[in-house]
Length: 290
Image 1 (cartoon, helix red, strand yellow):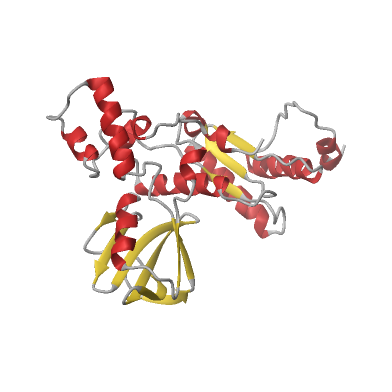
Image 2 (image 1 turned 90 degrees about the vertical axis):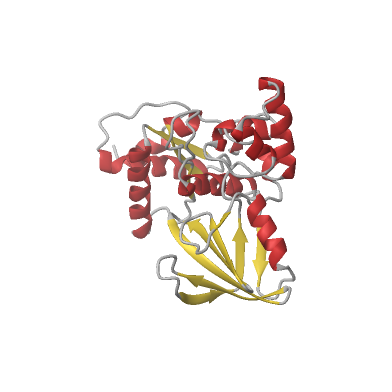
């Protein structure tokens, strides 16, 4: 029987066996595309064994899209942290950036948009911030916009970016006179943006290479999202301070407590994510359209 006919006969539950590894993505996309053509408006969650399998699935999807298959498919990934629970080590900035980008796109979409979200078992089980915390967290910039350098710097500091002498890695920003450099992660690659101010107005926004620091083209608009799910600002620092005291008592001699309660970054602070928000944490499934 032709595979397209078999796909049309799939109901709520099924088990497909003896599928070649290289055909996994094609088959999954075919099933989902078939469901979406029947006006099924929900998102699709693809759960894979580990990050290696997620990367392989993404490569396969990109391949099939290059041969004019599934052009309208929108794929997101939600990677797991690359560190053990309660280690005083923060996940890689690129992982934190990919996670908040995924959450933001799920929360801020057109009502008719549908996504496929590829996750590993670990990333599905790991809880993250509630959707209510994702309202108005981004900053939209365009040429001619009225905003001061200090306002932009304050936003970046409150959104988890770190000021460096030179911006080279995701989550870095640098300030030189009337120019602000910032490194973002987009589609798995690092993108540098150089924002040039004329007084309190954005004069230009240019792309630059994070390695060579050389600008190459100009863009008219830029959307800046927080560096991670942990939005360390005055509000969340106060929530952290109160919750930490409730759980552990007076901790004025604790370096982590002193740093975070004052709104300063600290290695491994992401492991205390539940203490920074009044809303309960949820897993990625709660962010999907069902």
